[in-house]
Length: 111
Image (cartoon, rainbow, N blue to C red; front, top):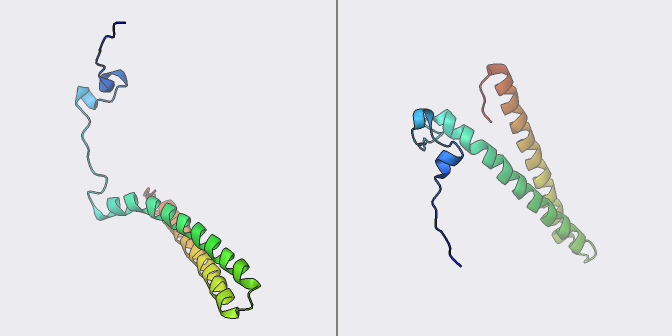
């Protein structure tokens, strides 16, 4: 069996070059404070959603596990974790809507 080795320029194959055939340069999106915030916000909202999900599961499990044990203090800890998770979700949801309203009013794309 004979194997032939060929090289393929992926940039030419998929037209990944810049204007005039120049190579693509990596320019950071956050050259200003606004660009930095716009780059970080979507990731922060996703990360906060994951943390929210974990806290809701943790608080619910603590309530269910400690409900029959007779220890009201442990059951109250689960209830407070669940309440904090829901309050955090409300804050995150309001922050997202405030950003969307600012985008609509100013016409500036943040996300």
